[in-house]
Length: 135
Image 1 (cartoon, one colour):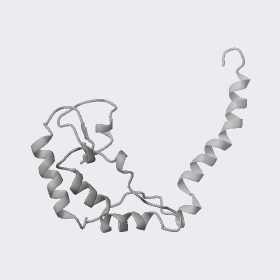
Image 2 (cartoon, rainbow, N blue to C red; image 1 turned 45 degrees about the horizontal axis):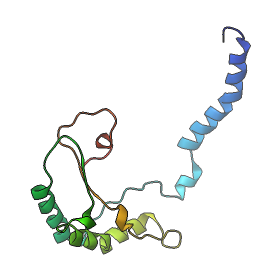
Image 3 (cartoon, rainbow, N blue to C red; image 1 turned 180 degrees about the vertical axis):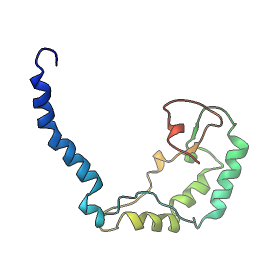
Image 4 (tube, one colour; image 1 turned 30 degrees about the vertical axis):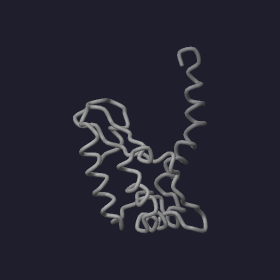
């Protein structure tokens, strides 16, 4: 800027249309009238017993600590069955189908990637998944 102040003006003039376009697209995006941008799924699961069994297993087998805990359920004897039930839960699938139409999306569980994520208690960290996910 000090060596060539006119460059600031030139860059501002060149970039301003992009900034305006970005703001207008974000706030006045016409396709959002036709496309659901909400990807949150809230359902009452049909397999309530599976949820209760998992909660009981977690409370008795996962110690409370200031770091998050990741448990791969298909490698644990007490969690494999309930998680398999939830992977095929009709209510969960119906919830996904409200957001992801069957003629556009093929929804199947990726069993190897499923995990039970237990949020840390009392951890104060600046940028971790604990500050993003909550239960």
